[in-house]
Length: 135
Ligand code: CMX
Image (cartoon, rainbow, N blue to C red; front, side, top):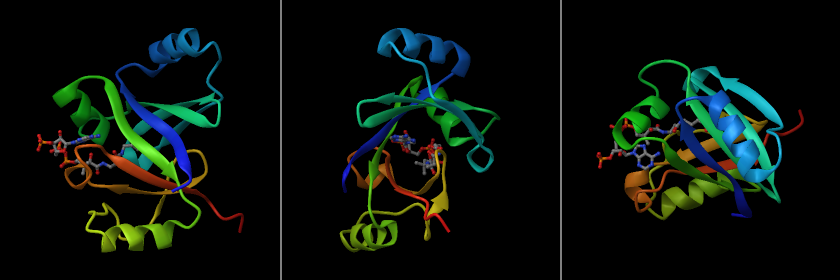
């Protein structure tokens, strides 16, 4: 694992939270992106070498809407940057962590991603992410 790539924060209203985080961080979000597969609208803020990803559910019964119903708004996941996501998935599976996908999937912000089940990581949803290869 190289560094914390981003922190994901579940929010009810992306537009209102963009305004709030703009005031908090003193800078604007640099992109807004929809991930259809996950049913989320996201926005990204850069803070040093790390990012904050705000996540709003765009339909019912998504991971984000379930999370907000159960726990309210707040920190949803920690994403770590990795150099080789396949190797890291194999290593972590060998260590007994439960991967949520057998193969990496395309995520927001030009990444390949995989999640680890929070039940196997002290209750914290962990994401691995790697820049998508150029070809
Ligand atoms: N962090 C910590 N615990 C979480 C969690 C989270 N983000 N989301 C769910 N849980 C916990 C729940 O609190 C619940 O715990 P209890 O059994 O103690 O009540 C348990 O996990 C099961 O929760 P659930 O609401 O029944 O949800 P599911 O089992 O259907 O799904 C999970 C949980 C983690 C497998 C699912 O949320 C998932 O697949 N997440 C990965 C995908 C994702 O989060 N996508 C949104 C972000 C996309 C992006 O970044 O672009």
